[in-house]
Image 1 (spheres, each protein chain N blue to C red):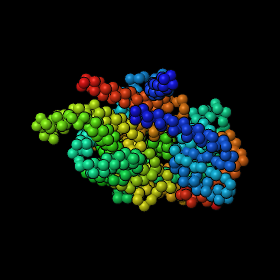
Image 2: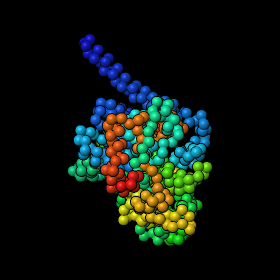
Image 3: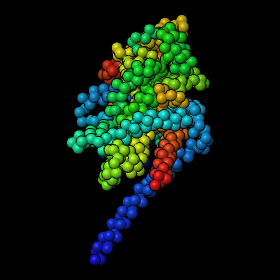
Image 4: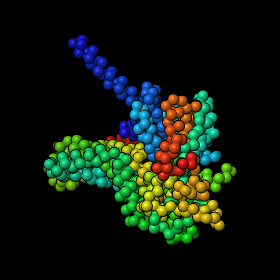
Length: 289
Length: 290
C-alpha cells in the first residue's frame, strides 16, 4: 500500500513538473527575446519601430520600421487562411462523416503525407510552377507575390487543420448523431446542427494551429513572396514577412549591433502576434461554452 | 505548441550547430573551415578540392551564407578562413580587435558583377546613371530606357550579401560615400544568386545582378558604360582584367591573425599559379598575370 502511494505521489509530481517546465520555457523564451530586443529601444522608439515604413537595416543611418513586415505577414496569413480553412474543414467533414471506410484511410494517409513534405521543397516547387502561373494568370510584373505565398502556405496548413478537425469530429459521441437522425434529421442536418457545434472547440483549435503554422513558416515564404519591404495594398504584390526577415538577415548581423537587436524585436513581435491569436481563440472558445 | 516550438527549435539548432562546429574545429587539426560569400562558394570549393587532391590527409569544409556571415563566424571563431566579396567593415574590424583578433586580408581574384535581363528584353546597354535610377526606383518603366512599355521588376540580393552591399555602394551611390541612395523598397530581395538567375530567366520584365560566374545563356548580360559617351562594355574576363568593365570588385580571403601551418599553405596555394588557374576556371578573374 505504501509503495503504491509513493508511486502515485512520484508520478503526480513528475507530471506536474513537466507541465510547469513547459510554461517556464515559454516564459524564458519571452524574457530572452525581450532582453535582446530591449537594446534597440534605447535608440529607436517602440512606436517608430512598429509604425515605421522603411526597413533599411544596414544603411547609415539605419531605419528600423517593421510596419511593412507586419502587414506582409498579415497579408500572407489572411490569404492562406481564406484558402485553407474552408478547404480543410470541408475535407475533415468528408473524411469523418461521409467517406466510405476504406477510402477514409487512404485519404488520411495522403493528407498526413502532405505534412511530411519539407517546406523548402514546397517552396522550390512553388517557385518553378506556381510563380510563373500566377504571373501569367493575373498578368503581373512578377509572380513572386503574397498570393503565391498564401497558396503554398495553405498547402502546409491543410494537414494540420484536416487531421485535428477530423479527430475532433470523430470524437463527437455517436449518440448525438444517432439521436439527431432518430428525430428525423437528414445526414447533412445532423452534421451541420449537431456534429459541427459539438466538435467546435476542436475545430477552432485546428484552425488556430493551422494559422500558427502559417505565421511561423519561413523557408517557403522567403522563396516565393519576393521579400520586398513595401506596404502591400493587394494580395497580388510582393511582400516581406517577419519570419523571412529574421531568417535572411540573422546570419549577417554583428552580435550586439542595433540590427541584431531589431531582429530580436521582430522575433518578439512574432511571439506577441501568435500569443494574441491564441488568446483570441481561447476567449472565443470559453464564450461559446 | 507548434509556433513557440518553431523558434525554440531554431535557436536550439543554431546553438547546437555553433557548438558542434566549435568542437569539430578544435578537435581536428587536419581540417580547415571556410565560410562566407555565396559568390565565392564555388571558387572556395574548387580551391579546396584542388588542394585536397595534393594533400589527401587534409579536410576542408566550404560553406556559404554571405560575406557578413563568414566574417561574423571568423570573429566568433567558428571558421578559419572567411571568404568575402567586400572589404571588412570598420565595425567588424573593431569587434575583431576587441576580441584580440587581427584579421589579415588576402586578395585572391576579381569578379565582374553582371547586370542581367531576360534574353528577349530589347534593352542591351545601360549607363551607370541609368542603372542607379532603375535600382533606386526613379526609372520604373522599361520604355524610359528604350525597351517595351512594361514595369521594371527589380531583383536584388538580401542584405547579408556582399554583392548587395557592393552594388549599392558602387552602382546606386556611384562610389560616393556621402550618397544616401537606397534600393527601391519595391525591389524583390532574393535569397541567392541562383534565385535571381532563375527569376530573370523566367521573367521578361526583370532586371537583376550577380557575379559573372552565374551567367548562362538563359540570361542576357547588359553592356555597361561609365557615362553616356563611354563605350558600353560586356562583363567578360578580359574586360575585368583590363579594368574597362566598370562594375568589378575584389574577392578576399580573411584569416584570424597571421596565417600559420595548414591555413598558410592553403592561402599560398590559392595565390600560386595553380590556384589562380582555378580562379579562372570558376569564371572569376585571376589577379596575377599568368
